[in-house]
Structure formats: structure tokens, C-alpha cells
Image (tube, rainbow, N blue to C red; front, top):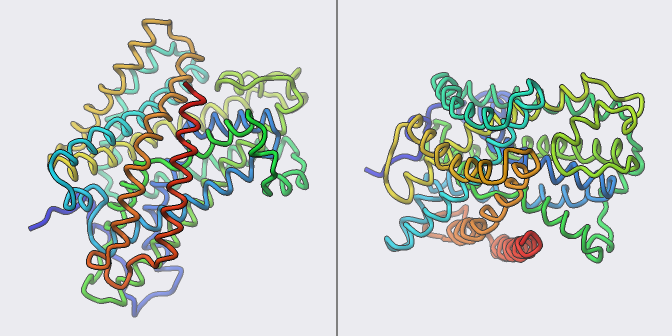
Length: 438
């Protein structure tokens, strides 16, 4: 019997039959996996690129954010299709098609990507603890080992309650930045103009590099793997074509609604940077710059207050902790799918965290535990994610274009072409980003 993806979560949430309940009731029943995936679109890597993009170019890069999230919607829907229709996560589906050496190679590539994802959460959490409580970065990094307890606590609640907790965290972060942007009184007309791309976006080298950073921080491999598994968490009659169609329909609704929420939060960050720091001659290179700027009347004028800066750091702490859940689940999916090795989630969490701490502590002891060097690691983590991305997207596109695997839900020729073109563009842009970083 074929193993289920994330067996403790698989088919653990009962949903209404296609023949009962209202649209809203069905949407609530299927809603949740999209929230867990959306957290990956709001990690510290996204925060840095959005804030720095706003501080340098005001609202011009909102169009890049919008394009990135539209592409993300397309890719996540393909991931959902694989999970709902084929009843396999991406790692399982790829493993069934390639030889042993290929499975090990892809596991190594994706394992490095999972560690890179975890690294952004560790650094974000450690920096937030420093900003809020003055805790030295070294102690903050070591303290993140304990977040395995948080993950275990959440997982004991069951996937449905985890989804609710994550959704509550997203709403909290959104409200915090909504309040901060509202107090900043941004120019609405300029925001609307920023949603429209301009030719200068591709001609200005520095602006292009930041744009590539925003795109590179938006679409990440672990979200693709995660969604293909979480899409299988709902329990319904898989032999009823009408029920499968409905599961696919509401899973898409769930994904798109939460990705729109992720777009708004990232847009709020960019607008915050563009409104408060664009004319302040203040270069945002790390989170402490933002934290201090929000509390400095010489930079943001009468809007400066300890409450503004405290709320910013608190939101950073929330996203750092919540990302631990998704990185744990994603790592388990990759390990189970490619190596057929199943570990208890607390062991998987500790393994990932210890591997993540090695480069962080090495660099910290080598150059000193200062925030700028730490946050530079977030930028370099994007390299690992960029390398892994084509090895994730291309197989997914071809698998969901396999008639034997997908049946009537197989990708149309147009979807196949669009997927290949988008993935090729993303790959080239990421290569450009890597060369710029190097």
C-alpha cells in the first residue's frame, strides 16, 4: 500500500459532500492549507526586499509584487492539482518517475533549500528578540532551538487548529502593518500608479536587481512541496468525480484568497518603507534600521513612537515563529518522498534546526554577532532557494501535464506553455539575481 503524504495530517479534516452545505460553509471547511502556504510568502526575506524597495523607489515596485503573486497563484494551483487529483505530493510523484541517483540528488538540493528557508526564520526570530528585549543575537539564535516545543505544541492540536493559529497570526501581522501604514498617510494615487509596470523597471540596473530580489523571495520551493501535501488533508469520497472537482475548486479558492492576503501584507511593507523612508535619506539595510527609524522623529516626523517600532518587531517575531511550522512540514515531505525515511516531527525539527545553526554560528563567531552580517545571510539564503526552484517547478509542470497521472484534470497545452515560459523566465531572473549577489 502506497504511503500517504504526512500521514498524521492526510485526510484528517472532514468536508461537506458536494450535495450539501452552502458555498460559504464549504469554503470554511476547505480553508486553511492556503494560510500555511501564505506564511512562506511573508518571511523575513520578503520583508527586507519589500522595505528596501519602498525606501529607494517609493511605490514603483508594487507592480513587481503584483506580478510575483500572480505567478505564485499559477504555480500553487498546479501543486494543488497534483495533490488532489493524483493523491501524491510532489516529492512522491517525482520519485516514482526517476532513478535512485536522481532521487538522492534532488533530496540534497531541496534539503539545502529547506535549511535556507529555516535560516531566514531563525535570523528573523533572533533579530526580533534583540529589538524587543535587547537579547544578544547569539542567545536569540540558540533560543530558537526551543521553538521545536512550539511546533510540537501546535501539532498536538491537529492540523485544523494549526491552520486557525496561522490564520490568526497572518491577520495580526496584517492589522499591525495596516495601522502603521494608515498612520503614515500614504499617497493613494501614487500607490495606484505603482501597481502599473514601467519600462524603467527593466532599464535601471539597481531597480532591476531589487525587483529580482522581490521575485526571488516570493516563489520558493518549500511552498510548492507543502501545498501538494496539505491539499490532501481534506477527507471526502475520492471515487466521486463531482467531489474531486469540488475539492479542487475550493482548494484553489483557499489558495488564492490567502495569497492575496500575503500580497497585501508585503504591499503594506513596501508602502511603509516608501512613505516613511523614501525622503528621509535613510538607507534601509536591516531590520534595526526600520525599528530605529520608526522611533526617530528626525526620520519619520511626528509618526515616530515606541509603539510603532515595538509593533514592527512583534510582527517580525510572529512570522519567525510561525514559519517554523511550515519549514518542519516541508522538510518532512521532502525526506519522506525522496528517501522514504519517516521521522517523528520533533526529530525532523531538531535535525533541520541544528543543520541551520551550523553556518549561522560559524559566521557569527568568525565575523562577530552583528545584525548586518546576520541579515546578509538572508540574502545569501535566496541563492539556495533560487537554485532549487527550477528543479521544483519544471517537474511539477510536466507531472501535471501527464494525462495518465491527471486524467481529465491534465494541463491544457496553453497551461503547459505558460508554465514552461514562466518557469524559464523565473530561472533566468534568479540566475541574474545570483550573479548580482556574487
